[in-house]
Length: 82
Image (spheres, rainbow, N blue to C red):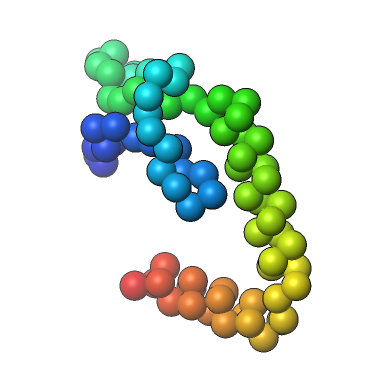
């Protein structure tokens, strides 16, 4: 089984956000009830920032040529295979 990082965090708009005083969701092992990790919950501001980043990314991707999009996807597939 893969262990969770000691302090999982949110990754929004190219940045890891600090865990800080965010609300948390406890992940437990159903077999023994042991806590595996506490995950930070996104705030409304976090969600707004993520949506803003997604909108900006969509505008960039939409304006990208089909050849450039294909190159990105081929590169991603190569990395996944590695």
